[in-house]
Length: 234
Length: 234
Image (cartoon, rainbow over all chains, first blue to last red; front, side, top):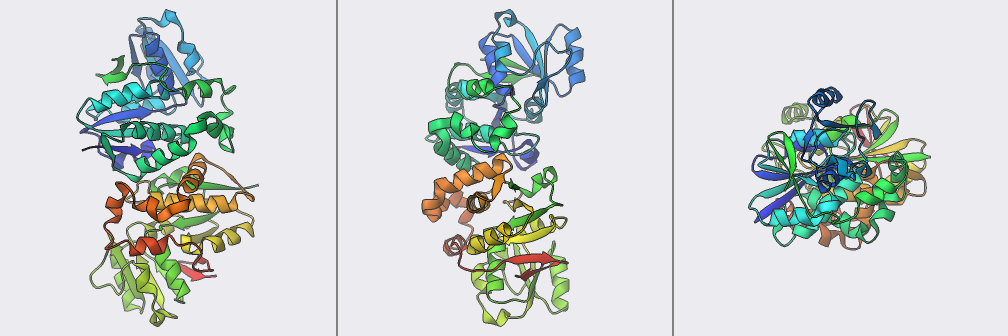
């Protein structure tokens, strides 16, 4: 049977094998949510790049450049990392280059995987459907927060694991824990994410508008797949 | 207010500060549970050592040597890592040297902490009491499993966090997630730990006797503290 495993931080990735797997890269707040939104608004491609300097070079080649560091848009960049910035029909057909604190690096860390997809609540069911219809095992890579475990990416891992439960077995404790955590919190994800000390980190976002948007399920029915350095809609 | 943070794998420890904190090192299956049991049977001290060779050298100095690798007792060692092996009044007053796959290394990785205690369900409330009566913030270090996230250590972190909730704030997402996971599973910890694919790893234990013993709460009212290279009962 196909398996699902979950890597709760990119720093733990060396403990996992990716070569024979579909890697789902997740950075709910906000990189992968924003990328999926951009594809819903029909950008042609998204190139994840590691550094601000790499991104600036691509601007000269006609890319729309997207840069975020520590939750803030970077000076000289066309767009920051709020999904609302990508709800713009002028982006139709454009090529984007994207560098963010956690998400872009996470995508680039699994380029050895057989297939790479983006994970977000916004296209959760579309991803589950894709995974059911192919034959490989799955590794969910949580981008985390500055290398640490984070809750929203783990909740996504749990939501995806639950959807796949009848077709896949949970390969590791992290997947089992993520699924339990999602069961625990799913009746009120927003309330759960806002409560307690956790809200301190999220308060970095101007208001909770991005958070509320990013945890909506199945707003879009599409997937984003990585091929030869770029992400495309499928 | 004092804070609690949780490090879900020793590999993520460089992302945390320990110097100003009490570190609680947890390896529920089975190192810290066995060590607490040994103190309940009045061993004089336990010296955690990194390698089998270090341990063998201490045998020549009169130590009782305890060695486990991959869940199995090591040839030539006096004891393995099942808590039942330490329920022996002949160990009264003895000095033990202890090397295990995950637990010993985890203790040795936080020697910069202000104080180091062992964490186990067996002495959960005693540890909570100790922590309430002192003034430092707390870092729970889960020994994990071969560097990965593991569920029983995380459940312990959640149990301890819940007990401390009125006196400490949760500093990170991992603590919040651990507390939720514990709430989710606490009505039937044994059943939860045995279910699903997780049982495959635990099946390495001859039967579930060790598991059932190690998740009993408050069987012993003592703490184990690390000072100058050794653990002592307090």
